[in-house]
Image 1 (cartoon, rainbow, N blue to C red):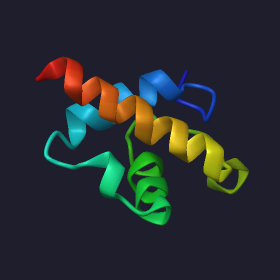
Image 2 (image 1 turned 180 degrees about the horizontal axis):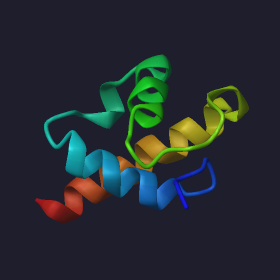
Image 3 (image 1 turned 90 degrees about the vertical axis):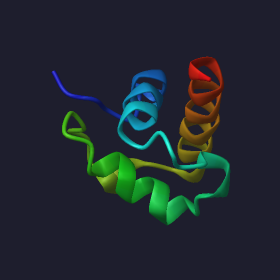
Length: 69
């Protein structure tokens, strides 16, 4: 089963692995939305996300990058 908007932590891990050079704190939300929806495992409806969820993903992604460093 693919990733959905509920899978914030898993999305963050995928983003950290796929885009290790990106700074999620600097990405505009539309760009973050694009990166998430382009992940191979992502299967949810892009129209069903809200800004708070995208901000949670960016925060989790930032934390994941910090753990990898």
